[in-house]
Structures are given as structure tokens and as C-alpha cells.
Image 1 (cartoon, one colour):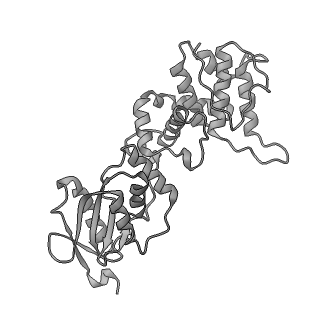
Image 2 (image 1 turned 60 degrees about the horizontal axis):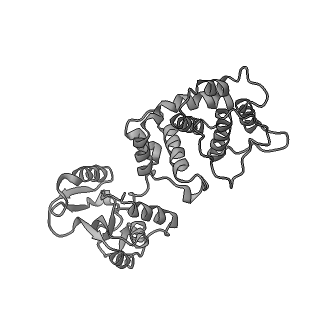
Image 3 (image 1 turned 180 degrees about the horizontal axis):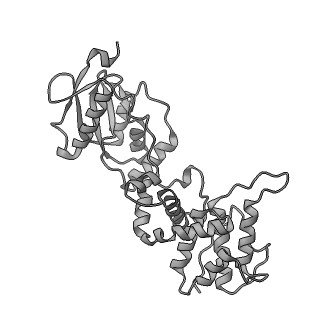
Length: 320
């Protein structure tokens, strides 16, 4: 018989919680229970669901994982991302921890435990025990928050574009010689928030990226991030640079701005008998910065000079 028909009752023990820190979690869980036919009761007694914040060492994590009998397959990328966050000191105690059901089996948290072992450092987590069998089945079915979600929650406008811009700046500062796609190039939500705090003026370049993208076909977030980077690095008036790549008027052969526009246009055009080229942020930023460096040093360019190869590092910005 379904739980809703049985009138199942289970309890939450707040005695070992850190005060009101988890009160909002309890309210959320109470609401969830009401929607699913469960009655959520606070207090003590037999059959309670208990929680406490515990320091989980690598040794303890290994012991807990031995009780993992019914979890989904381990995702190595998730474990790696969690472990990296732990090493950076970004791991915080939240309502998402590890959980054991009434039989003692681990029902939630295998990736967090595996990450503790990989990071090889002790980490504080919320540990739930005496969870009714099946009670946590719905907790991991929701959409995972991405960087744009986090920025939107913080009240940022144009959160999707801004998150991509911040990611580009972080990658430029931290991975100029490496690829910007794939699992190893992941940027955490925490790093996105931190980078935006370090570069608050990035917000002002959202419309700049919109203009350049519309005028040339360049990825708008890449155009905005690259424009921010050259503005921060340069000590000269960049109005002619932006007017040239956006408007394209009065440009002569060999002008880096004209060549850059042509290359971007070509990227957006489908050649006869060929699929449309895939647009990549790293490629666009590299071409943008090469053209800018040539322009700022009064160097003329040919098509053979303004090109991109995946293995080359993204160039530093000339500050003439």
C-alpha cells in the first residue's frame, strides 16, 4: 500500500543539529512530506530520523562506502570535481550529506564519500541515520544548479551570458595554454562567484558583447569577455578599436579590424557541401586578441597570420 494511504509517520531529531542553521531544511522537508503523503514530526523517540554534523575522515569514508549496497554507478567526474572543491577549501556543510536507512545501508552520498578518499582530507558533512527505506528516492531527481542559476539567484541580470563571460575570464587567467572544453576545463559555481567578485566591471560588457556578436557573428559572451580583458589591460583609448570591429567603416586592406570581421563572418557562413563550423569560445577569444595585439602595435595582418590552431596558447594582451 502506498505511503500516502498508510499514513506513514517518521520523525526528525533536532537535538544534535547546529541550532537554526538547518531549520529551513526541516521546513522544506515538511512541505515535501505533505505533498507526498508523509507526516513530518519533530521530536525524539524510536524510529526518528536523526542528523548530525560529523567530521568524515578518508578512513571513515571508506568504512561507510562498504555499506553502499543500492546506489547508482559512481561518476568519476563528479568525484573529481567534489575532491577538487574539498582541496580548495570550498566544501561547506549543507543539508546535502550522506544518509543511511533503517537497515544501515548507505542510500545517499557515495560521491561525497569517494571524494573525501580522493582528496585525502577530513571533511565535515551532515550525516542522516534511520532514514525510512525509500524516503530519499526523490532527492536527486531535480535539475542541478549551474552557474547561471546561481547568478540569477544572486539577482544578476543576463545571468546566462554573464556566467559564460565569467567562465571565459577564469579560463583565460588559469588555463591559457590548455583546452577550454571537456571535464578538466570545468569551472565550479564557487569559482564563478569568486571571479565575478574580483571582476565586478565585467557586468558592464554584456551590451558590448551583444553589439560585437550581432555585427560580426562572434560568440557574444566571448566578445564581451575579450573586450573586458583588453580594456582592463590597455592604457589607451579603445574607441577606434570597438568602432572598427562593430561598424567596419573606413577600414583598409591589412587593417586587423577588417580581417577579424571577415574571419568571423566566414565562421558563420555555411560553405557549399560542408557542415556549419562549430563555434568555440577559445578560438574566438584567440583570434580577437591576435587582431587586437596587431592593431594596438600598428601591425598590418594577412589572412595567413590571423589564424587559430587548437594547440597554441591563448595570447597575452599587448599593453601599448
